[in-house]
Length: 177
Image 1: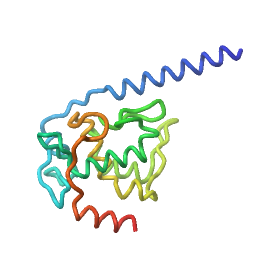
Image 2: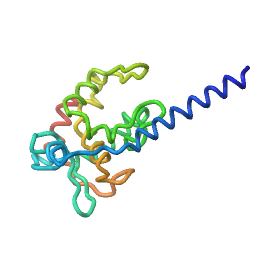
Image 3: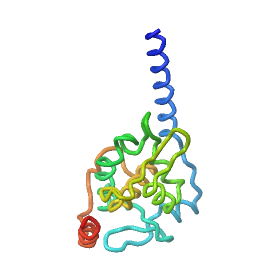
Image 4: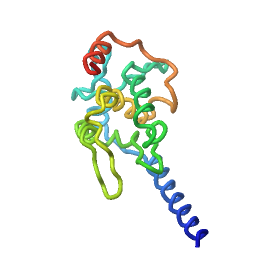
């Protein structure tokens, strides 16, 4: 009986792994309008890039240098989100892939889900609204995952990054207290 139960658990784990891998490999088809409004960097304010709709986004230079916020997002994602959502936002057997999801989800919906949490069936995303290590860097995590979802940066630590803007330091100090 123990062997049958172990086999059942193993098959369940393999099925979940397959679902997570399928979710991480999903392709997201965006229209040019969606790319323009949600992805394309239009303007920069104190080192932070925004779309025409004033939604935070990433900027990668031709030589592969990422903006500071994208680099910070990599660091913060790996310290706070990686455990559940897997490396580079690709998903795990425990939680869904995020990189491609960021391309479909509304920025303000993402803020609400992270701050307030979400439950869908047996899946539970806890609330991080009181966690300064998440909330003070949520835009950074968001733009990093968008860059990953668009395949604008390779997996792993970005090789080159812009310098940390003074405005970022001030905002970080104010938020962290």
